[in-house]
Length: 475
Image (cartoon, rainbow, N blue to C red; front, side):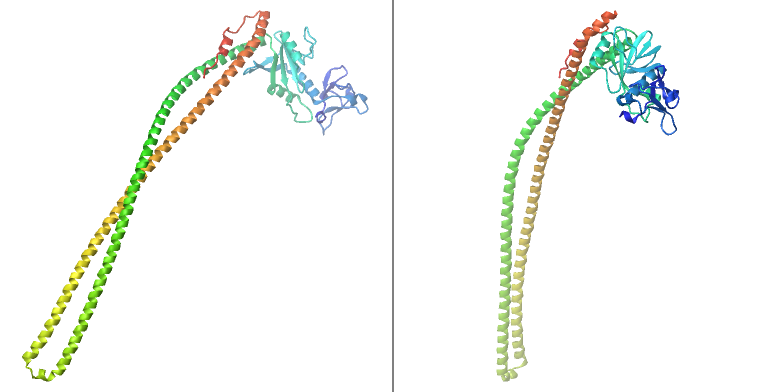
């Protein structure tokens, strides 16, 4: 990745770090590489950005390990040396930013009582702040342990995610990088301005955490009491519902058996009534058929009578022809008497016929009316049976709906039980976190006490801190 970026810093004749903007063009710059010491050429033109390049004939350049990381380190040190200002986090837990204005800044200077050389040392009110800049190599455990042993304020800035916007890195980009990059404390002195700020913040953070924990415990106790009450109430309801369900199942089972028996009896009665009505209807049809046969017999008898009458008339006509002479001799009175006798006989026959027909029609109408009445009565009974069947079906549907509602309530109770189990698991997990925090505090407590003892600072923590964190939340 280093070949994508250009070199803008080099050693001048006085062996000081200089910028490409401060030297002459070409070999007149008299500059050498900060890594391999090879001679450099200052390329300053209108097309590419100003930069240094190795002289093509210098053999040292073949083994040069310059990279953009080297350039970034140099520019970061330059920014701190020029600005003498740095924004740092105060505290490790929920830190806040604080801007330091250094009295003095020294680049790559050894610290007292150690061979360690930090990238930058800033001085504020006589207090040292060691500044390390990490691009691809971060401080190891030995270096961090030595800083802590010496009770130094040491902070490391993480520039590993930095990506330049052009082929050269600018001072403005590095200044913004200090403002926005991740920074962590490698070591904090037990005394001094920075130490007091950090330790005060940590103490306040622990107090806030304890207050938040107490509030959480109080809230948990209230929630636990409410949930226990709800659980007790739900258990009572569940018992009542189970008892009610058992009773309803027995009642429904008995009712269903009764309903089935009643419906079976009603159905049998309905089938019997329909069968009886069918038989009566068959008899009525048979009776109507019989009446039709009687009427046809009457018509036949009437036809027979007419035939006999015709025969008699023919016989009378023949007798009239035979006795024409005698008839002529009879007087008008005798002729009238014979004619009157004939008309009275015909009239008597017509009266008898009309009487027989009227009696037959009256009897037929009476039987038809009676049969119609029976038919209407059977139809009304059938309609009533259908209504009774619908009412029974409605009662069965209501029982089924009640059972469904009981099942829904049971499902809701199961869901509430699952939610309470999840809450209990969450509480157990929170207890583990507090126990781990207590172990960590217990682990670092001897070191903190030793450091404060050496610095002559009173022990700032309460004695019941470990006991408070060791308290386990009861589910």
